[in-house]
Length: 173
Image 1 (cartoon, one colour):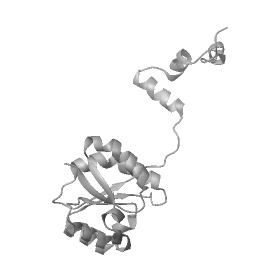
Image 2 (tube, rainbow, N blue to C red):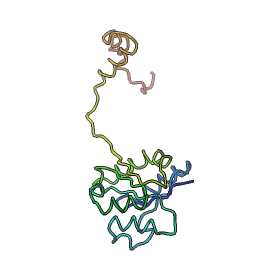
Image 3 (cartoon, rainbow, N blue to C red):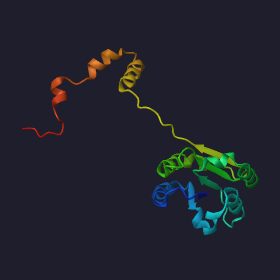
Image 4 (cartoon, rainbow, N blue to C red):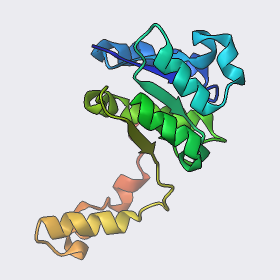
């Protein structure tokens, strides 16, 4: 059975729709914008949205938001506990709706399989912004894995001058 989640206004609906079509094949989730549930929800506080979901005719599993400040709001947390909804928060993605949507769809299947309608839950979705790795470090790990010296592996696998100068897509004359 698909989980039913309300999406706050920060998720770009065209992207969510396209990704939902692909994701729906697994039957994980039905995602509905709060404004599509009821246009009046756009004017409610988050705790009121959760309470409205709890009283709604459809069996809502939870709310998905990019507003991490909700986690510091006692009224919101109290209503979350009372309603036993699941809250999914795309952390540090409030200014980047594409990042938030990517995070959501990266984790959504796992969240849906572990959501318990009898227990309130909070899922904090994060993506680390990291520096690039150096390819030499990866070659060293490959050498270590093969119990080899990295320099030997490098010499065996690097292209010679003639091979490096030849374009693999160039037409043979």
